[in-house]
Length: 446
Image 1 (cartoon, rainbow, N blue to C red):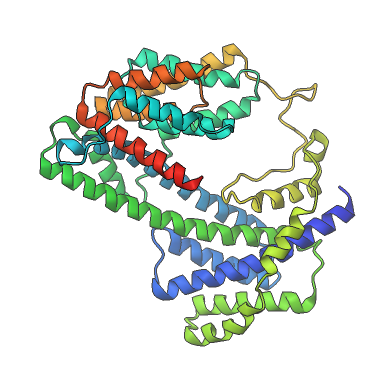
Image 2: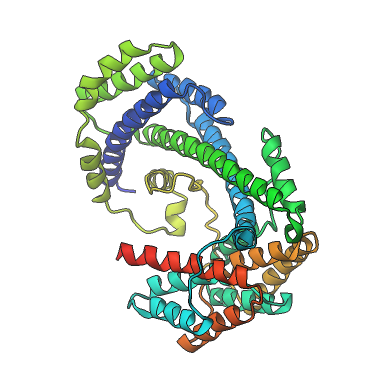
């Protein structure tokens, strides 16, 4: 790659990440003065991160250890996401049981009127992406009364849009479907989270059709507690990963970045002060000294990010993927993309493409083979669960798929059929309530 581009990109990235690292590290410091312990494995990760920041400030090479820490945090987030996906399935079930235990207001809409309301909501936008998003949200809340074979045929129909697309795009979708339907869960879910794991097993074995009022209330309370626990831990890992990513950018960009000595001294002063406060219990003295330093950072983060965005990153080619400078620049771009847990590129002469330079594409045979393997996994899940949970899984999967309807009439027919086939009036009323809330929320955003 051109030296001029590398210098320009790395300098902007270096300045932006240095500023953001200083601010985020201080924010974490403030949080820990109020809540001294991070949840889950967050404390252990922070100790390692502090060591790596100290080593970086001393000029030591940390990239390999930093990459390992980043992968460990990503792994923990994958496990937390799997827990969240699982508990969302059981939340779906409990929501639809609530009217069997509590007296709640009725929506007052019959099936035909409500179908017309949903269709008006879907079609009152000209943007196809917005329309498809609304269709998927609605499918995720409608009652599910499908045979397994009909469900499988709808899944295959939804996956058919990947025919002719790169294999990686289909594989990404299959990963989503498998994790969110509990067909494939990461290993080590019980490690360090035994109580959470046992709670998940309890929900899996619960007889939802014969819950007493007390058992139902207890299940709701447990679900709320679990949700709060997962959110707290997830927020902790996101905060740590953002700091890790910025430290990663500094490590990648340092050799090519051009920065004023006084500017770098400012960033190092803040980061060193936070590090001392976290590792040596510096407390209030450090906090007072930060105020003047942090004031000097105002506006810098936004300015440097705008400068970084102006650097034009060349599109990926097999030749460029074998260029260490290109891969380094590409990883900086990924680390600053806003997706904190994005996989990074490796330098390789192998591009993952065929000899003619085109990626391997999905054909019908590959699609059907992939789908059949997934259906086999789902059969295992369905055989060990109750019908309400099975329906919740079906609803989640159908809402994850690309929109598989070919016309407005097909969508309307599906919605009306879902409502009319549901003989459980309490469940149907809850679905209508949730969909009404969805429409109201969307209307407020417009």
